[in-house]
Amino acid sequence: MGFDDYDNYDGLGLAELVKRGEVSPGDLVEAAIMRIEKLDPALNAVVHRAFDCARDEAKRELPDGPFKGVPFLIKDLGCPVGGMPRSSGSRFMRDEVPAEDGILTRRYRHAGMIILGKTNTPEFGITGTTESAHLGPCRNPWNPEYISGGSSGGSAAATASGMVPLAHASDGLGSIRIPAACCGLVGLKTTRDRNPSGMNDPDRILGFGVDHVVSRTVRDSAAMLDWTGQPEPGCPYAVPAKERPYLEEIRREPGRLRIAFSTATPSGRPIDPEIESALHATAKQLEALGHDVFEANIDIDYRKLYAAQGTISSANAAANLARMAERIGREPNEDELERLTWAGIRHGQKQSGEDVMRAWGTFRVLCRELVAAYENFDVFLTPVLGTDPPKVGHIDTVGLDPREVGKRQARIFPFTPPCNFTGQPAISLPLALSEAGLPIGMQFAGRYADEATLFRLSAQLEQAVPWADRRPAVWAE
Image (cartoon, rainbow, N blue to C red; front, top):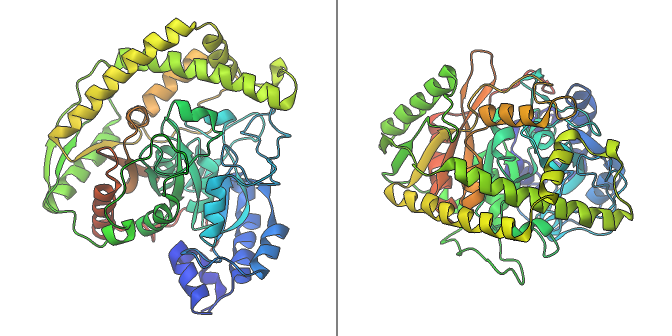
């Protein structure tokens, strides 16, 4: 085997080569570095490079985890990596360097991963596209004129182009599933608190955000969650334990599932015909696999739900800015935050404590209605996006009025936020390609804490509709 074969393996496959002594961790690191240097000028996926540190680490004795010796990248948002900058995609935070690894980073290292650097993200992960004034736009390996999705777009572009087999990602309103859909990857948003976020994470109070990975195969996602998804010491909301390892789940048949599907968006806007066609094709594929598939909508007051969420999230954004200013030692200048960020913060600063608590009460009641709807089915199927991925610049957080940004995002990314609100798991799978040659992702949402069903179904679909051998335009070969 020549080492040109690096990007033909997933993470577990590369680790198996290391275990058998066919390649060394150093070989893998050099293969990844070569691909980053060759491909990243077209994509802008990797915004901080720690190649010398990775080379040194590859020479040391590594933990004997499932991904021993495998190159890895971490998103430049949340998830502290000691000694590496964490700009959060913002000029205001460009000089922040955490002193030590966070708990999830430590678990990645304990899995045997070698961290090569950090990936691109929009300012504070706000948008479904990875474009910021600070880090610049990240582009889609399938066609660099188009977005890679957000806010984990750098991780998705790096993984889809073969720089690394999987990469860290996080999801607060769709930020794992959206870039996975745009770039043709597997992207699981885990159950709330399945993975640790660290006791000092200020966003924990909302519970919207989770961390996991984007990957090219289902088994890499399953294996990583087996390794990282253990209760965090002191976690007040630890999720129910899994019945068995997820790597075992993907070898089990899912059984005959009741799968509801819907084209209805929370705003009532129709989705594009090509996306709707791909959804119906997926429903037919599921029927052919023996599942009970039917169309159904979740009928709740989405307008009231999103209004309540907006009040809560903007107040949290204002509080987070105050915390960041304390760490930095000063307030941001006007040009150090983007227009969209300022709009959210200023809206939050206007909210009273009573406003936030009233919104929180409304929000919790409607979330309970959402969760109750899942008693009628095992899995809820929608597309991830309502349209094809737009071109870079269409969602311009610097030049566009923030209200226009909101309208465009609502049309393009209508389906992902509800599972962040309720804490339920949901996965994006790359089950179709558009006429323009861009991936189309389908979202499968499960009951609370039921990643097992999603993994079994995903493995079944991966076998029935293989995607791992598809190659984007920007690829090492």
